[in-house]
Image (cartoon, rainbow, N blue to C red; front, side, top):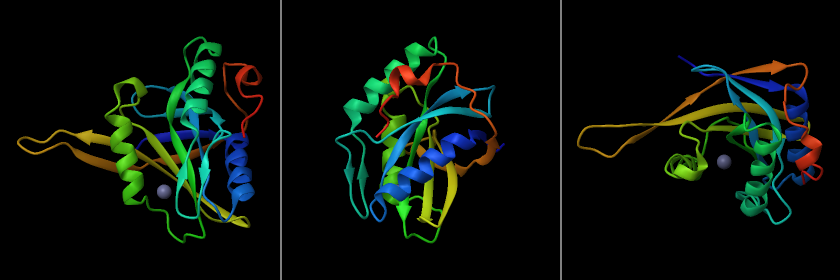
Length: 179
Ligand SMILES: [Zn+2]
């Protein structure tokens, strides 16, 4: 069954603005939200790349310390209901939706980091250019195999738009500066 991911318009617009701001360099952020049952995910907020993020033409590295602080703050502010669901990043000037091998490696490492508490992370890619950003949402999982190492399975999720944000937290507490 394909995972359904609900994304508020406002969150999508934040990602688009951020992708255009750093174009033609890559940027990204991380999603907060919750799982509503076995397959739908509800995104409530997006945390920015952080002040010490690295933006390059074919590479993006978030300011991880800063993001972890923001994630923890948001988690507490939401009464420990909204957790980190996964990440997004831009693929400037790219013409297709797919993840790179580096992206796949990153997903494997998120799944393999128990403290990340994200066994089935989402990863969204905004590809294109400032006049036309397309969004593709992926979800990764490790499938155990007998005798062999676990296989990384990445499926495209079904992205649905929400008109208004659904966050429980007062995002201004933590996210006063999302850049
Ligand atoms: Zn990528």
